[in-house]
Image (tube, rainbow over all chains, first blue to last red):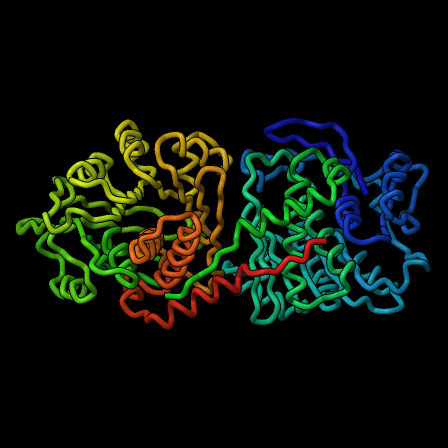
Length: 299
Length: 299
C-alpha cells in the first residue's frame, strides 16, 4: 500500500494511492470477502482510503502504521508502447524495515497471494502461517532476480504458483522460448505458472497443460499501473470464492483476472476498480468469451 | 515463387524454394483444389518443385517462365526474437519486369489472394479479372508504404480485406493503438482486416466485431520464413473450400491459418507444408481449441 506518481502519453498525476496490495485487494474484493491485507503504511496514507477498503470487506488488522514515517513512493513514466516504463523515483520509506506479523485472525487463510516484494519478506509470511494455505501464489520482478536470486529461488520451493511477465520468465531461466522457460520454472518448485504478456494476454501452465487468455484489444490504455496486480487479485478472488483449484477453474480465474485488468487501465491508479459494478464485470466477461469463441468444423 | 537463403539461431540453409505464392499455394492446397497460381520464375526454378505443386492441384498456367533470367532471391537472418530479421540480399531478377497476365482458365475465380508485391502489380491483377471475385484479400509490407504509398492506398479501395502485421498497421495509419489503427484502415477501403502479431496471435476486425486467434506456444520456432503467407493460404483455402465468407466462418479460417503457420515454422522453408497429413491438421486444430476454450460461470 503506497503512493505513485504516474506519467503516461495521456496524462500525469502527482500522487495517487497505489501499491501491489491495494490493487490485489480492491480487485479480489469484487469476488470474495473478507480480504485480509498485510502491508505497512506511513502517517500520510489517507484515512478515507482505509475506510473505503473496510467498506469493501478488506480487513486491515495486518497493516502496520508507522506514525513517524512516510509510505512507500514510486514514480514512473510510460512510453507510447505501454509495456515499457522508466522508474523515476523509488522512496522505500516505511518499506525499508518491513517485517510483517500475521494477526491471529488471519491464521487459517486458504489462499495466499504474495505481492511483489523482497523474497525474504515473502518467505517470512509463508513461515508465519500455522496451517499451509491451499494455494500460495507469488509475484516477483527482475529487480529481485538481480539483487536476491538465491533467496528468490528458495521461496519458489514453497509456492504453488509463480506469476511473472515474459521478460521475467526469460531472465529467471535464461530460456528465450516461453514454453522452455515454463518447463524450467516448474522444475524450480511451482506446479503452476502464469506468464503475463501485457497487451498480448497471459499463459497458464501446469504439467503438460497450457491455456491462453487473451487481453481485450483496447482503443486506449490510459494507465497500465497496477494491471498485473489487479489481474492477480481477480484471479485469486475467483479461486477463493469458489474454493476450487482445478485447472478448469483456473482457466476461468485467469479470464476474470484479465477482465479486471482491462478495467484497471482505463483510469489512473485503482480509481476504476472502485467504480465497476457486477453488471459491468459480467458484460466484460462476455466480451472475452466472444473474442476467442469459435466453433471449428474439422475438415 | 522464388529462392531464399535463411539463417536462424537454429541453423542455416543456402538455397531453398520460397516466395509468398509458394507458401500460400501449398497451404491452401490442403483445403481446396485447384489453386490457380500467378507468378514469374527464372530458368533456375526446379522442375521437381513444379511437378510437386501440380500433384497437389496447384495449376501453373499463370506462372511465367523467363528462360534467360534467374528467379527472385532473398536472403535474411533472424534474431533470437524471431519477430526481428535483417534482410541481407534482395535480387529482384525476373521480378523486375513482372507484368502478370491472367490465363483464360483462371477467369471466374471466386477467391483472390494478392501476395506481398508492388501495389501496381496487385492492382493489375484485379483489373485483369473480368468478373469481380467474391473476396479479394491483400497482403503488403512496410517497403511499399515507404516507396509506393499512393499506389498502395489506391489498391486498398479495391480489396475486401487487408492482412498486415502490427508494425505495418501502425505505420500505415500513424496510430499506435491497434484498435484505432484498425478503424482507420477500414476507412481506407477494406471491410475486413487481419492484424498478424506473430507469436502473439492474430486479430480479425470487421465493423465493430473483433476476434482473436492465438498462436500456439511452441518450444522452438525453427524458421519463421513464410509463416504469414502460410497463414494466408490456410485462411483462403478454408474460405474457398466452404464458399462461406460470414464472420463466423472467417473465425474458423483464421484458426486454420494459424494452425498451418504453426506447422510451417517447424522446418526450413515450405518443407513441412509438404509433409503434414489431414490427421495432423485435425489434431492441431484441436490443440488450438483446447488452448483458448473456457466455460465461464458468470458470478
